[in-house]
Length: 254
Image (cartoon, rainbow, N blue to C red; front, side, top):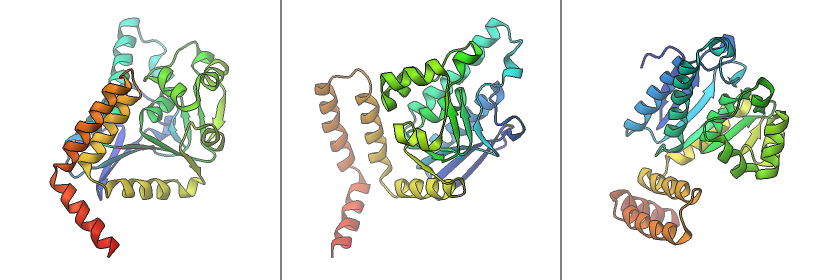
C-alpha cells in the first residue's frame, strides 16, 4: 500500500502503522489522518492481521496537530479537519482487533489522543506525553475527555488538562496513563512480544472480549452487560477455533 505520510507493514499477524513525517515530529495534517484511515481499513479487512501496532518514525510518536498547516485554516475547513480526525479516533475505538500504541517519543495533543484511543500503550521511559491544548487556546479531541478520566481518574485528569503539563513515560506508567514504560532501545521488542502473545489467541474471542469491554466502559447496565457476556461466550464456543484451542490445551497438560 502506497501512503504519503505513513509506513505500513504486515508480518506474523501484526500490522504496523508508522507515522512518517519525522522532519516535523510526525505532526498531523489532514493527509496523515486520511492515510491512517486507509491503513486501518486494510488491517481490518485482512483476516491474517490479528493485532495493530501504531508508532512514529524518528524522535516522536506525534506532536499533535500541524499548527503551521492549521494557522490560517478557515472555520469550515477546520471543522472538516476535526471531523476527519474524530472519525479516525472512532475507527480505532471501535476497531475489532486489539491495538497497541508504541509511544517512542513526543506524544502531544492529538498525537497522544491517538495513543489513548488504542487498547494498550507502551512508552519509552523518556517519552514526553501531554495535552498542551489549554496553552495554545484549543481543546482536546478523540474522546479524550472520557478516556483520560477512565485511566487516571477525574482529579488527575483535570490536573493534567488544566496545567497542560508534560510528563515522561515513567510518570505516565506510575499514574496509569500507559500500561508500561521501558528503555527506548527495548520499546519495539517489548511491543512486538506483547503483540505476538495476543496474535496467538483466537481472533473471534478477542473480538468478543473487546466488544464487551467497550460496552462495559459506556452506559450499558450491568444486567445488559451480563446478558451480552452469555451471548459472547456461546458465540465463541461454537467456533472451530474453540475445539482446536481445547486440543492444544489438553496436549500441554499431558
